[in-house]
Length: 133
Image (cartoon, rainbow, N blue to C red; front, side):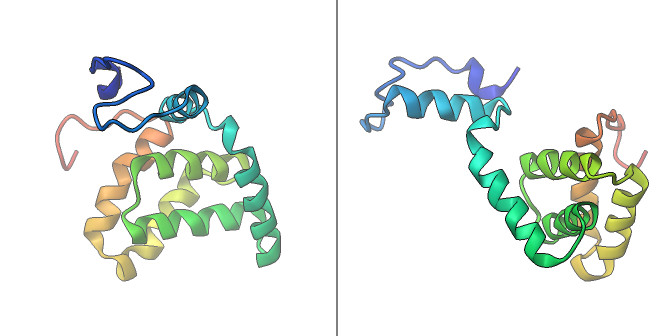
């Protein structure tokens, strides 16, 4: 269960900050919060236009973006989306691991270590019980 789902919201349209949030915006944010990215179809189309302009194939483009996520110490949700895109483009889990190995000297080991569990979750793998396993 998501942490936010445990919170009680007194009034969906008027948060404690006093800022009014219309129902459509509230529903769109709730959909994004649970991983429904359908409202971002336009952004996905822009992503494809960007990819085409790079002369990279979809798999290479996705793998490069995973490397960038590591370098940026990106949010966990970023890995979910990008790993899925890489797998959909034909990348293997071994190639994703290869990206971590390739970027480690430039990004530093702490960022690679921080990215590893996010990538494991995106691949549907169970995280180890203790660090270092």
